[in-house]
Image 1 (spheres, helix red, strand yellow):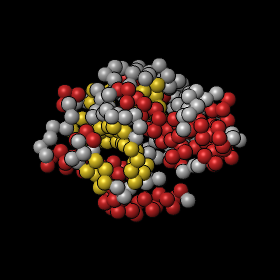
Image 2 (image 1 turned 135 degrees about the vertical axis):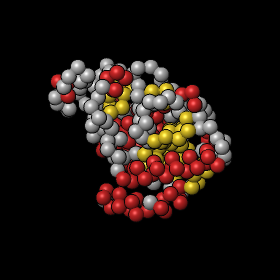
Image 3 (image 1 turned 60 degrees about the vertical axis):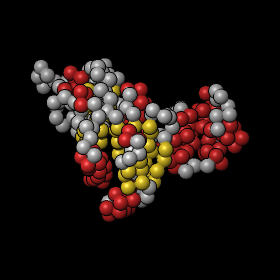
Image 4 (image 1 turned 90 degrees about the vertical axis):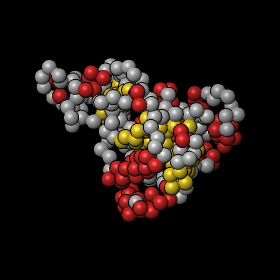
Amino acid sequence: MKLITLDEMIFYKKIYGLSYMDIAERSGVPLSTVQKVFSKATAIPRNKTLLYLSKAFDEFQESSYSMVNDGVYEGISSGGSNAVDLSSYENKTINDYLALPNDVRVELIDGVFYDMASPSYLHQKISFELAYLMEEYIRSNKGKCSVSYAPTDVQLDKDDKTMVQPDVLVTCDRKKITYARVVGAPDLIIEVLSDSNWYHDVFRKKNKYESSGVREYWIVMPKQRKIMVYFFEKSSNPTEYSFNDIIPVNIWDGKCLINFKEISERLDYLLNAAEQNNA
């Protein structure tokens, strides 16, 4: 049983539709205690209580997407002067990142490499749709913002410890855009979840984006047909939308509206295929 944070539990409860009674039954914690903890009426829950509550979320916790420490890419460290030792994924820099072989897909966050899953066709189509609609809005309004999509390198903190590849990004300060990459925080980032990267995008990258100065962050969840929109300038809490909603883009004061119902109708054949595959 792995201890997870209360914020993680609240997220799982919301996404997977668990009731307080479900959590009480799965964890063995009394219903009244569950209600107090999740409503935050108990300011500082005991670690023992959190540990038992974590049991209710075992099946939702990070599994396949984790930091690798056992030298998965055997032999990479013996290929010449530019080869990178991947026997450990820690204490890495952008120079290490740039020296990786082309077939190794990782992101660098605070000096640690994290594996990236290969995107599905559905994942790429959603990214394309969103990038296209935002590019269309910028062009029709003769705006200065620039839209890009993965694999675009973003040197998020302007240091040598972090390099990420968001699915879609919008950068309005052109001084941050270089020939090779974006240096600094984009204004808007969108990540499309897959089964193997959800923890990374929902928790690790969300926290990193917020602390680095990203203004707005969207998490698109095809499996749940939901979108979580964070506008960090106003709140650290997300607004939840469905695939039937029209979503305002906050960095443009809501003047750009993304009609997700139209997107989901265009991609219905892929969404249905994904659901059948997960059945």
